Length: 312
Image: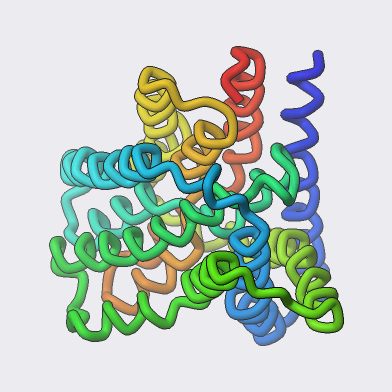
């Protein structure tokens, strides 16, 4: 019973905040321009501050487990290779293959991941997830470009890829937090207090904005591709990753971070990148919408199973 309550507490707030965002968009509380500005605020200010706080407060001797990080990123790379074959077998058009592949391997770990980690383990225990985000986000960016290039969705120069990674606000926020942590910087309360308040606002504002970004009317006729993509992203990928992680002996916050990495819904940025590089934007949007919708159920089930088995 306790596992059920913890699982519900982890997922229900996320679901209701996304539902609130969808409702507010439905009654035209948000204009499209306002929503773009809110999303920009989340990804350029609030989430970077949340990652900064997590990295700054983390006990690095405990959260930096090199074998765990290597296994986690190794599984990301392995999943990319396997899902490339899945996308080739599922759809024929190169643009659809690129969009489907992106939707299956690229998770929204910064937004949804940090929210779940904070609910499950508390704000003081999110350092491991923050480190995973700092490493995995650039890996996702590189693999996303590779996927789009591989299926001839578009062209993006190497220097531009490196620039996007180096200027990613999420990576900058986490790295700044790590540096301040390592040098033992003492931030005055006058500055830290408003930073802490803004960091706490990241999760609810981000989830409301994500819910408001759902556009059901964009769903295309690619039912088979969407079904395969959703099942791969939310069921088979986390099942395989967690089986490996548990077999290797990872437990607690580390296995929880691995679960979040592979069970998170498709990253919203995969849609904008598909648009930018000429892949199938409709299929990319459908992956964001449906993985976001069904992840409320699947994340609850994964969380309940791991708690019930005593693994986290």
